[in-house]
Image (cartoon, rainbow, N blue to C red; front, side, top):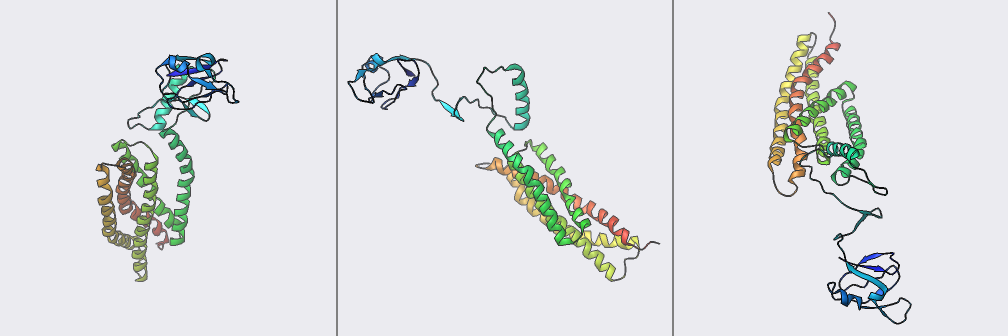
Length: 303
C-alpha cells in the first residue's frame, strides 16, 4: 500500500489508481496512472484548491510504500477489525458466555479499544428479547380464544396442558438432532402451540359429547358410567387424531433429510414440531381422558 503523508504529518492517505484525492491539507491530486513508480508519483503536479502554480507532490508530502490493511472498516464511526468464528452447531449464547469468560481473564485491551460480539449471537439476542414478549402474548391469546370457545376455565386448562407435554418432545428432538436454540427453532415452537391447542380442543369436545350423550340418556349415575362415557369419547377421537398427526408427520419428517437452499432453516422449524406432536399425541389420548374423568367425577351423586 502506498501512503501519502502531508507536510504536517496530520494524515496518512492511501493513493488509488485513476482517482482524485483530497488530502487533509486541501491539495487536489491529478489522475495517476500507476502506484508502482514512486519517482513518477513524486513528480505529479498538485494544484492548490485556491489556485496558484502547481507543485510536485514530492515537495508537499512524503511518498513511501508501507504494509497496511487491504480494507478499512468502521462501525459506529470507529475503526473496526472483525474476527470470524464458526460455531459448528454450538449454541451461540453458550459459546459467547464461555469465550467471554476466557477473554476477560487472558485479554487486556489498551485504552480506547472495545470488544463486541456480533453476527448470529447479536441477532439471537435481539430476537430473544422480542420473543419474551411474543410467546407470553401468544399463550394468553390462545387461552382467551379457548375460554370463549369452551366457556369453562377447567376445559381451557386441560387444553393448555398440551403445551408442557409437547415441549418435552420438542426439547428431546432438538437434543437428538443437535440443534441449538435459534430463531427458526422458536418459530417451530410457536407453530406447535397452535397445533396443540387445536388438537386438544377437539379431544375435550369429543369427551364432552360422549358425556352429554350418556347424561341425556340417564346413564350417568355411577363412576363406571362416567368411565364408559370417557372411553367412548376417547376411542372416537383416536382415528381423527391419528390422521391429523400422521398427515403432519408425512409433511414435516422429510424436511429433516432435505438439502439445498433454506434446508437448514426449515429443519430447525420442523424438528420441534415433529417431537412435540409425538408426545402431545400420547398425552391427549392417555392423560386427557384420565384428567377429564377426575374432573367430571365431582359432579356424580354421592352414595
